[in-house]
Length: 112
Length: 116
Image (cartoon, rainbow over all chains, first blue to last red; front, top):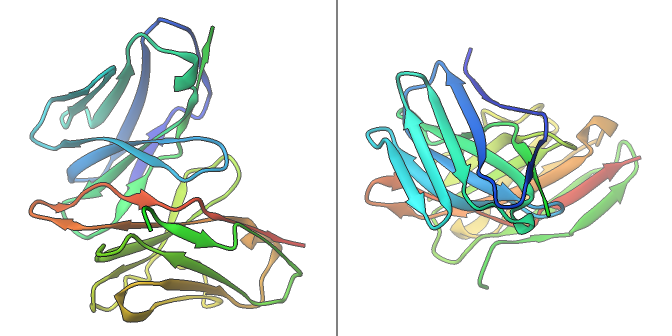
C-alpha cells in the first residue's frame, strides 16, 4: 500500500542549529514533492516544491533534497530560530492522478 | 479576496444534525480540494474539483459526505447525520494550473467542527 511517513515525534533543537526533517514514501512514482508549514489553528502554507528529476532546492535558510532511489526527502532549516517552531508537512504528487497526498507532519520546536 | 476563505470558522452541532461548510477559493483558481484534519494528524483528502470535470470523490469517507462547487468558484461541503467521529478541522485549498501541472496549494484557515 502507499504510505508517506514523517516522524511523529516532535523534534526539539537549540536556536542556531540546523533542523533536519525526514519524509519517506513507499509505492509512489512521484512527479514532485512539496513541503508545507502549519501553525496551530491555521491552514498549511507552501514552502518549497522539488521535482522528481531535481536533487536539491534552496530558498533562503531552507533546503530540500529528494532521493528517488532511497524514496526520501530531507528538509533542512539552517540557523534555526524560535519563530521556525511549527509543524512541517511533506506532500507528494504522483505521476498519475491529480491528488496531493500529505504525510502526518513533524512538529519542530526551536528553543532559545 | 486575497486568499482562500472558509466559513464558519467554528461549528458546534449535535449528533444527527446536518452541517454545511463553505469555501471561497482564490479567484481564477481552477482546482479546489477539501481535506479533513483530526487532532494531531495529517491531512486526509476528501474531494477534488477541477473546472467543469466530474469531481474526484474517492476520499469521501461515507455517503453522508457530499460536496458541490457552483459556477466553478464557491464550494460547499455537506455532512448529513453528523457523528462524533466527524469532529475535525475541515480545510479547503485551491490551486491554479501551471504549464507543468498543479503547483502549490493555497489553504484556507479551516472550519473546526465539533459534534456533541
